[in-house]
Length: 255
Length: 346
Image (cartoon, rainbow over all chains, first blue to last red; front, side, top):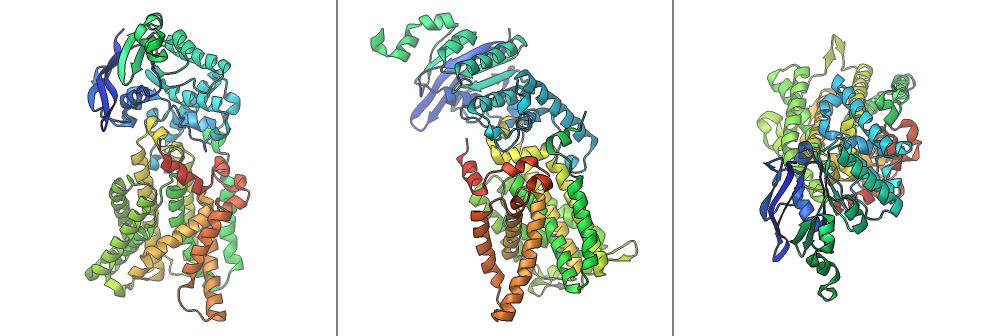
């Protein structure tokens, strides 16, 4: 298994505060890696650095051996990395179908003029986007919601929608920022099912999550952050027994 | 399989048919030269406001400087035909291409700005262009304006004739509508609307957001330039004050009154404001003996009232589902709310 994503000594300082301090790990092909840690441990900052939303103070991120830190956000999708957001970034005034069709943008060449003159390529792009979106939405049992306004959906469905949008163009690495947050048990299980199905098909995942049961069930490897520093890395079994992790979660006294 | 476009956005030929019927019927009921002039000017202004609707309503980017691009189009046409005897059609084409390029270059810089700052930057562009129009008096005729701009003629047809020019202008409006709805009903239209909803979300999906914003800004500027050229050849005289900020604001009022999320709204808004303009002028002169620009006061009032009572514009009052090319625009949120939301960022 080659390393799809390699994170080397990533550090982020905000003024005098070090939010992430010298964190290194990797995600292999077809692997699910979870990042966990108490609130304020720097998980989202780490996530944002990997996906180029903020630039690291130090360190670098490699994707398939090529440096990606410092690149434009939209470049990453073209390389094969997609992500979701903790606070959802769906297009609430667009329909479910349109939202997921937007997820195919990477493979769409239509520009203002080809659209205006309605060149033959536009029809091809539209049909491709529609088919891809329809397929994913059917797989996720949302095909009865195609023309619903995304903003009108329940939170759980919006979460599913953002996930569908992130996977529709079949990216190699899918980064999920708290994919289960706010979901009930049934919804959580369904989501976990989608993730392991995609893993079977060779996709890799990097995700931040708080629901321990899900993490232990899904993750191949877990990276634990505390106060911006990586305090442990290992399989779910190893992490559950790790004293540093237990103390970070429960406090020193508990040991 | 049914066409993807139809599945997503329904059919548009009914709106087109209604539009064409209206354009054909109006000359039958209108005989006054005065009303014809008004209808022609409405057509010319519609070309600009349709572009503004794409920019403001769809992409969510404001411009209070589009009069500048109208001015560039008008002056390129005017100067090239009057001073260099270039064919009006060639001049018009040069104006459109030049404006597209100028707007593209400006857009790459100013569209990095957001909200109020972007609005201020576009006002600045308008002022700069105005100063250039006055200052480059060797070419433009300066504050005195440029006279003797020839009428258009097409394949031997004299477009100086009111009725001919009416049909010519509205045919162009139709082409502009066709081109614009083609854009709206494609992946580009979705990208513009998604930028409006979440810029960061759009970027994450691999879309170079700036590229699309700049392209639509330049396209709307090109529409404005086309309208400017038509105006110059119709009125035969142009002067810098026509293309000042007050005109940009008037255009904005038209788009907002009609409904910013629909290009049909732009047309309805343009027509309403133009007629209202005439009414105000008539009433002001006849009953109150006012000779100043009392319209400006009324525009201010209209904007406030529209924002409070009909944020979706006139087109929002009518049954939008039947005339809007975009189904989902009916549920679009209040513009004010949107602005607040877009400033929140991630």
